[in-house]
Amino acid sequence: MELFFAANQSGFASVASYLAAHILLCLVPAFFVAGGLSVLVPQPSIVRFLGPNAPKWIAYPAAASAGSLLAVCS
Image (cartoon, rainbow, N blue to C red):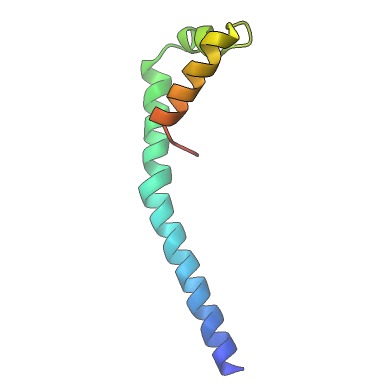
């Protein structure tokens, strides 16, 4: 039973360490990038290329290139 609790404690410590590193190295920069984009890129230009009325032959490549360049998931 003692081995079970030690394994669980080690597992929880590993998950906590992973989450701390993930938040610091991924989410915080992603929020800064998203904030910078929302401030620097005007919304009408984004809607023009990615909005509901954008032609699909423009919208799909624009979304694919933006998604590959800005691989931020927040």
